[in-house]
Picture 1 (spheres, one colour):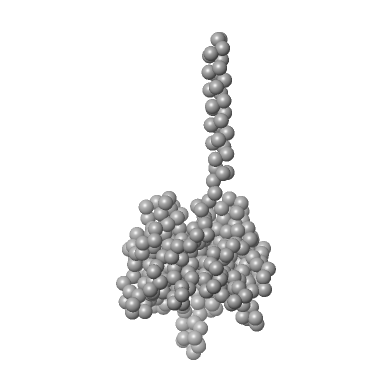
Picture 2: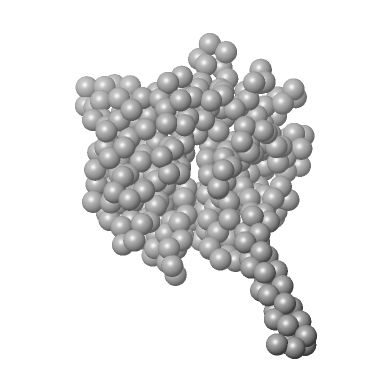
Length: 341
């Protein structure tokens, strides 16, 4: 073998080695994008639906009418946000923003809101309520989940394969309860492909806020005055908690975000549970609350708010327990949902 051929072989080996090493290191060098949605008050004290991407703020409306954002889902390069916009007649209109452009899902003649969005393939699912009927929209077409006998609301949608899971609650009147109009009984519900399942017996106050499905296991977070986690319909009370707003399952770990409300001090403390073990997200003495949890790799993201010295809610994102302010604290703001891609 001559020196020329030997040099070519060595050079080829070095190039292959370089490419191989570069491919291995590339995934770890990628920084994920963190999307958070909620609302903040503008100078006219009107709520404006807001999207924060990596901490950078984007208003989803011009602030003429009240808007709020409850859920965000990112599919490829498209960003979907679910919430509502108040119209000129004062009604909430169920609204889905795609890349900042609003699509109205209800007709604006009564109250309606959408609380959750999930994208599966080419299909966009949105859960909420219209005219006090729990409703699921698929690609803009509405499907009623309840028959309007009682007021009902859908809070979250999750899609796995061909199965569509929706959770929410229904108000159950007691003919002997004269306080019904003040505080009706609430029954937590799960709909799988439109088939209803009761998660509570309707004798108390239970709301299902969030659903996550892993394999054959269905996890639902909720409660009312007592934070709860249902796994395949079996309920577990979460310690030191009054509300559980969001659930996310990563491997063997089940994360739930919520709060504990103090009736004496009239404030709340943000909580994160991992397999039932509670973690307080903020050691500050001011009020905090956690609305949403998302796990990406080894990092745990939680969205919510904390109240500052001036009494304003500050939209907040916790990453592994460390708080980041999303709003400047000069007025009220709230972070309702986090999504990481």
